[in-house]
Length: 607
Image (cartoon, rainbow, N blue to C red; front, top):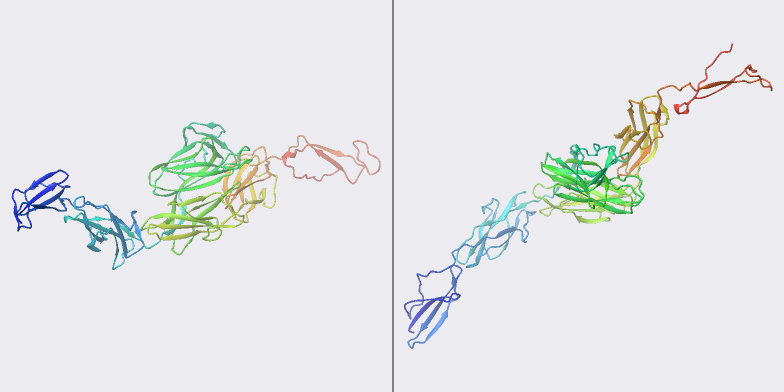
């Protein structure tokens, strides 16, 4: 062997650096100094061995690269999937998955893994080498406490020995308790101003612009008509809406708010069986609701709608409108209330779901609302089902509604006097489930039945005239299936009229009502009783009227005539009386509309 020649070669630049001297044949290693190496560049060493005859052999190394940077950090997830898991029901096992760590120069050589209960500290399991694995399951020697937040930490080392910073996951919450059921409590006061549109002008005119000094704003391209009639759901007034109306609400307290309102399609003979759509907006949330339509309807069929919203203490806007510009419907009794609730015992699994049915024309639907809470983790999904037995799915299989706490099912077929059960399953982030059931909902397809509506103080007798200024009404109403939920009483000068008194809520158990009048109308007074059962169906019944009389019957036009009689077959002459034992007389001229009930004939003496 003669000598060696060493060359440092950068291939992509065709740049060659050659040593200025030859090395002896006994040398097998050599350090090269003074080179100006660059990062992200591959370098190769070329060695040529020459013999004494001048012949040579060339060998090239596999190359090297200058690496002065630590590995780039990635992301650490809780769980074994790309989607980060926020909770676990295991108190000892923690799973972690990481990706995104990189080193362009020398590559990732290995990872180190640790477990922490305090962010930034590997206080549960110290850093230890896990090779090039990108997932790890750790089992703790002692169980983690309920509500503990466990974090996994990972750092990477590259081929040059550089180490990255430790990256921790955002933590996984230990939750071994399922969601808790919540009972509904009383609501706060309604925050809607003019909730039944009583402050609108009392006319049947159509308005396509804002009304001054009114709490509701009429949107552009919107027309409304106010109606003053006994068919209003609340009070005396409702509106017909084509477009949308809105109101700004001042929400003073953070919490869960319930919105209820009533709609009805406009009675018409030209409509066919169909469904119209309306919408409500609260803040940035919008929901669509259906209205059922049938032809040849002579009255309003009010349909109740309920929605829930979780609101901050701030001003928000409420809008109610028609989805299509060509449709219109009636709106009344808009109520927006803060809803309070209380946590129940874990063993209680009934009566936490409020459910009611809506029957309009040939359509049937069921509505349900519920509340669950979870103090450690959030509730990620609700499933609900409808059946004819507790927990059953005969009418609807378990269906997800996301995180909504209410749901509607439309176009269902119910059998009269049967029971319907709603089941709700709440799933938290730890995939723990709680199931709750509604009380049986009795399907009642018939409205309440009236036995009578009587005028007068005696419930067993109806009167047509009275002298007292106090109007008293008695009635008897029943519903064998779902019982009576509420009754309202109104007074007017004809059946269904509310000009003397609008509908007032009355005690359903007393079944009587009274009102002292200040003036006496010239015509009869009629009472209208409107009762609704717990299935939402309404019946209306009227009294036959009572007239108040303050004066005695007038005698100005009365004629009293003595009729001559005879004790024989011969008629007596005029002005003569031929019977010593009896007399006859007759009278006319008393007015029937003055309520004459009977006549009293006084005794008199003859001389």
